[in-house]
Image 1: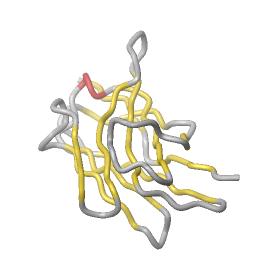
Image 2: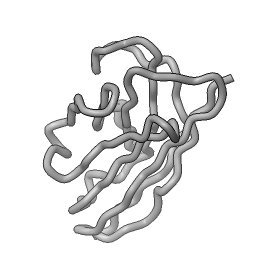
Image 3: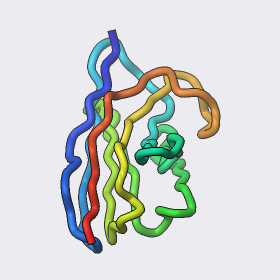
Image 4: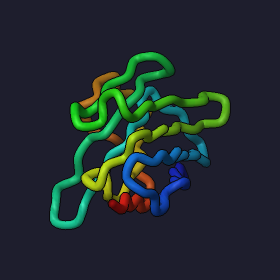
Length: 120
């Protein structure tokens, strides 16, 4: 059974940085991986995605501040978050799909999430 486990969340001040990690286990391969987030009272939203190792896509709200990367050998994806703002506070989820090559298509696997809180 495939599992995605996120780590790296925490409490950080405005302007600070965090690096989220997501590691996959089980009989797993994926064409794309992504990070989503959900703030209290809001819908889950796409943050950043990566197809294989080079094709990336970012939400406008994080473009230029966040960087997604992945390590195929480690079955991991990372999200480097810089210049964090209070509006980045949310639970961040890792997602992956074995076959899709489009960012806006469904993701088969999801993690449990890691909380990021940005204080002013």
